[in-house]
Amino acid sequence: MNLEGRKIVVNKSSKELSELLKTPENYKDFMPDGLQKFESREDGFKFGLQGMPEIALKIDEVTDEKAVLKSASSSLDFTLTATLKPLNENQTEVQMLFEGKFNPFIKMMVEKPLQNFINTLTDKIEAYK
Image 1 (cartoon, rainbow, N blue to C red):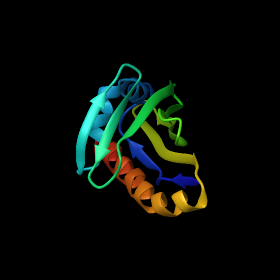
Image 2: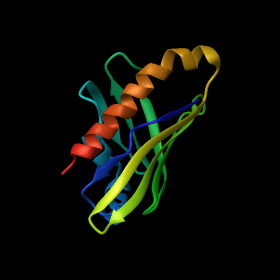
Image 3: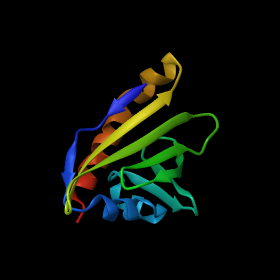
Image 4: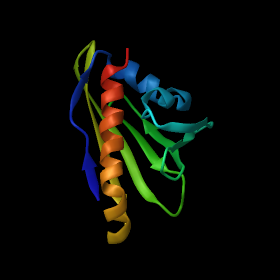
């Protein structure tokens, strides 16, 4: 299952964004409004949204071109990648990409909430100052 967020332009260099995305605590700023729990860890974070199970993510790789988050749970196999494409020294195009391996039943249940989550992340990153 692959989902995409819309492409946005952020008024930060790709280097600034990659530095921001290396720190687990910073992801709290991008979470949806229904956030009920956020716990940062050395290599990632765990969060809980209203009406959804808690999700643990590991920051797998962060470069000036991308930030890759992977599921920290062996029962869920997915990655969430933010692609970072420098437009100039103060602007970067960002797009969220989700790739997950789910059975058809799970896919049917999680596809819409995941797309909403990706859209919210995109909106929050776009609005981030």
